[in-house]
Image (tube, rainbow, N blue to C red):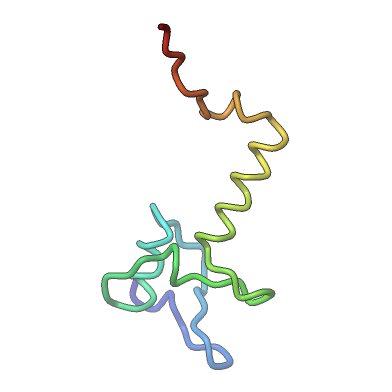
Length: 80
């Protein structure tokens, strides 16, 4: 990845598209150390972490599909 990440206006920017397997792998490439990408990546627009953004996306999907279609289960019934 040498030479693909360059300083630009006080930030680092990739000169070309680079694929990563996870947000943590991307954060590790940028920071050079083990990182938790879910909390390291932050939206400039509102300061939310990637984790918070992802949680909102899941909640929206659950609302639009209905909870029963996305893996929520009702508690088991107990017969007496």
